Image 1 (tube, helix red, strand yellow):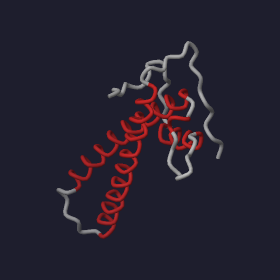
Image 2 (cartoon, one colour):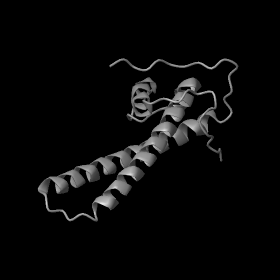
Image 3 (spheres, one colour):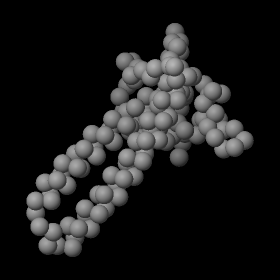
Image 4 (cartoon, rainbow, N blue to C red):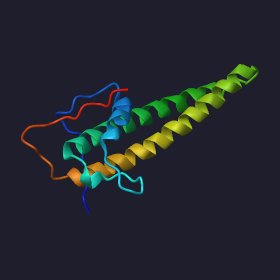
Length: 132
């Protein structure tokens, strides 16, 4: 069983980890059943994807924890205004979606790390982000 590793020390941190993750995904090949074919992908891509997924996971974890703390404080105020209830509902949906994204990011990172645990090129290559 392969172990997952932490993001590379030489990887530049990005303020756009979720965008990077999304814009790297189209580089992954698919098999006939529309499943991702990680094994056929360039190892450099897998490392980039794992780094982006790990960063996204960290950002989502910290952000949703902060939202939870804010909601806990807001709970001490009575909900007299309809707008407050709407805001809390919207934040709830956002947190649910972010946590679903975190689950997918975790799966992507794990699979990529599993396939690149012994990948250590002399020169680090990076694939470009897909243009939107």
